[in-house]
Amino acid sequence: MKNNLPNFLIVGAAKCGTSSLHNYLNQHPDVYMPSYNEQGMKVKEPRFLIKNLVKDRLHNGIWNLESYQALFNHVVNEKAIGESTVLYLYYYNEAIKNIKKYLGDDVKIIIMLRNPVDRAFSAYTHVSRSMKELLSFEEALKIEKNRLENDIVLTPMVMYKNMGLYHDMVKAYIDNFKNIHVIMHEDFQYNTKQVVKETLAFLGILRVVELDIHSKHNVGGKSWRFSFLKFFFMQDNFIKKELRFVFSKKLRSKFRIFLEYFLKEKIKPINPETKKELIRFFRNDVEKLEELLNVDLKSWKE
Image (cartoon, rainbow, N blue to C red):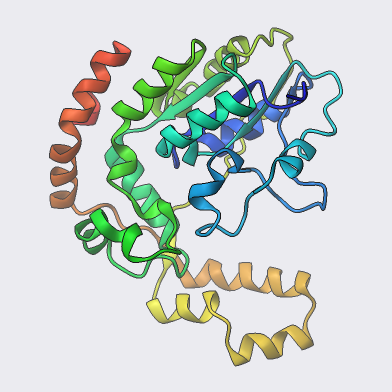
């Protein structure tokens, strides 16, 4: 095992602030987290430790050990070396097996959790911005159970309910690793500076450095005003092909941002009845999580 492989991981959960935490930690000179591969392609989530489960579903990822090691070739003398892949929490059995195999038992694990109802709806609004989700939230919830089996290329992110059943996932990591740091999304959102400070201390980083913790990353909150607009912008078509010959990529990108400003609207809140149903669905798991972590999650149950 090469000594520049990760000694810590942010394993999830998705839509709980992991992108922001990744970027905040990565600003510290004593922390190394890869954002690009050797070819200069963006690769914040390597997904290598669950490659066998997701490589046929997700386009972006690192699928062999040599490429995974190469992500950390530029480590100099950073004390904390890490990566963040949110699906390591959901696919915990595969991830834990490979963490032990490639990184050892002493790797530090960071887990971020959010009210599962809010997380589910946030994940839906994120996926529905693309062509990967064409159903309403309620329709997607109804068919979730066998959805991945029925569509072999569908993103695992559509498991909106199942990804919020945290107890077994968290317990598995606690049972297998001695260094676990759990962050609640509410704490991270409203007391960011303190949470980042505590996380750096967990990683053994005590040097005080001024970090930009005000920028938000991977933030959603908007949807297409009309469904046909999503089909036009997200799928290839004759007009888009013609525009590629006329305008540069940079200019097309600026024009798209300009159009989306007018063609998108703020996400409508979750349907109150759907929210009540999801609270009931998650209640038992939340209560088990409260006992496991010895925390009060009353706000998640109301």
